[in-house]
Image (tube, rainbow, N blue to C red; front, side, top):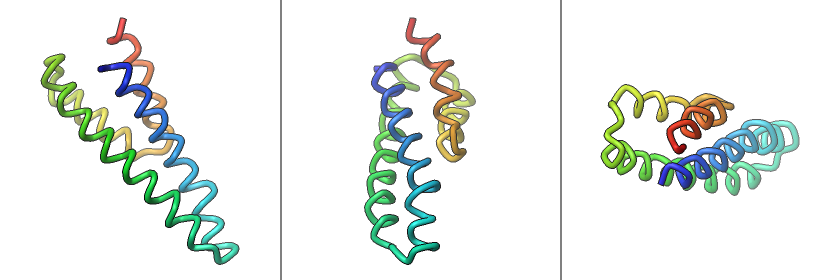
Length: 93
């Protein structure tokens, strides 16, 4: 379950970077709002899936709420999920 959370976190992190680094410039610099629509939808689904998986992980592994909040807040920061991946990898072993 932790492995799935890690994979989902990394994919969500990549989608966030694509949204900020590719889709948004395409929208505002080149007038292509469809890029944000597509990448934004994918990112939103991945974000919700990550949050939905985080709750059962908190319960199953009896993680403290502070750690859960840390994992959640990391999704809001670019590259944040890549930082938390290392901690989750340690917990997975």
